[in-house]
Structure formats: structure tokens, C-alpha cells
Amino acid sequence: MMKKDGRLIVALDVDSYRAAARLVKQLSKYVKVFKVGSILFTQCGPKIIKYIHKKGGKVFLDLKYNDIPNTVAGAAVEATKLGVYMLNVHATAGKEAMRMTAEAVSHEAKKQHIFKPIVIAVTVLTSLHDEDVAALGLSGNVQDNVLRFATLAREAGLDGIVCSPHEIKMIKEKFGDRFVTVTPGIRPQWDSAKDDQKRVLTPKQAISNGTDFIVVGRPVLKAPSPVKAVKQILEEIR
Image 1: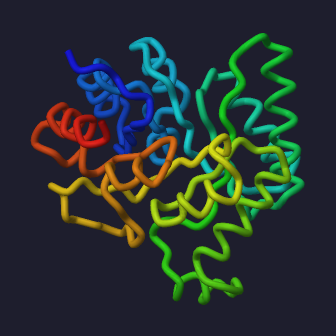
Image 2 (image 1 turned 180 degrees about the vertical axis):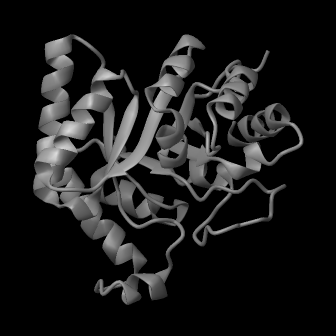
């Protein structure tokens, strides 16, 4: 049987516990990490996290916490208690929010004698391009802003960032291999649909560029056979 590859994260971007659980049951033989985002978590909460753990999987809790520092850190602590493998905050919450989050998560994990989640910062969403960044009033292009946010995240003590495949090499050259990159905007060669993603590459290209994790959602979820789609992606990145 094909071995699992921890670099592949399958995004459970569905709107019900039943649909998510069905996918986890199908894919858990091949996938180590599943992403739970705002739609699914709002619908069914920690219940789906418990199910993923029950099936032997790990959870990337993708809620992009963005609030005042105390609130962001507090939310991250609660996620840590749930035993998630990875969680994220939005870099626009600011350096102090990221610093407090990193410290609070580390403290809670030590206190509870549990795994410390990988804590990463969202930089510039893969649905945004240079014109979108300019419209938000941010100076510089996408790469300038990804680098700016990544620098803040690193200085705040976070483990890494979320960025598009196009910024991986720049981040690794600047901060080294130990600074984690998690990469959405992944489209296999056999799936030409970009949907609302603008900065995309194939799984093989992203891995070749040096990313630590690729996040794949719709190419798997929309496939006639999600299992076959996952196997094809695993073959491609190997």
C-alpha cells in the first residue's frame, strides 16, 4: 500500500460533519494531516477534530485568528488544548499578537504535557494579486508584503508562515529551511481549474521549490475519486 506523506495536507472544505467524516474515512490510509477551516469548524466545532484524531490523523486548524493580542493568544491556547498539530494566526493582527500567541501556546503545551502545535502566520492570501494588495492600501507588491509579514512572524517567535508557491524560494533563502512554509494555491497538472486562486503551482513544483507542506482542497474534493486524486498527488511529489 502507498505510504502516507506528511507533506500533503488535504483541506476538508465541506459544510457538514457527515461529508468531512466520509472524506477522512476514505483518505486516512493515505493522508496524515487534514485541514479544518472556518466553514467546517463553524458547522460542527471540535467534534470533527476528535473524529480525525480517532482515525489516526492530525489537524491543521485553519481559523486565521485576527484580533487583539489577548484574544488571539487565548484562542490559540484553546486550540492547543484540542490537540491540533498546526494552527494559524493572521499576520495583520500584529507582532505583539503573534509574540503573545507563540509564548502562550508553548506555555500551555508544557503545562499540559502535550504536543506544541506548529504556529504559523498567514501572509497574503493566494486569492490576491498585486492589484488587490494595492487596493488594500499596502505599499509594495505581493512579494514585498509576504516578506514583511514573514519577518514579523519570525521576530515574534512563530514557526513559519502560509504563503503561495511563488514565494517559497524567497522565504527559504531569507529565513532558512527550519522556518516552515505551508503552501495553498496548489493545482495538479491534471486539474487546470484555478477557481479563486491566483498564485498557483503544481504539487511537484511547490515541493521542488522547498515547501514543507502543500494544502490541496478542491482538486481532491471535486474529483470523481478522492482516493485516486490523493494517490496521484502523492506520486507526483515523490
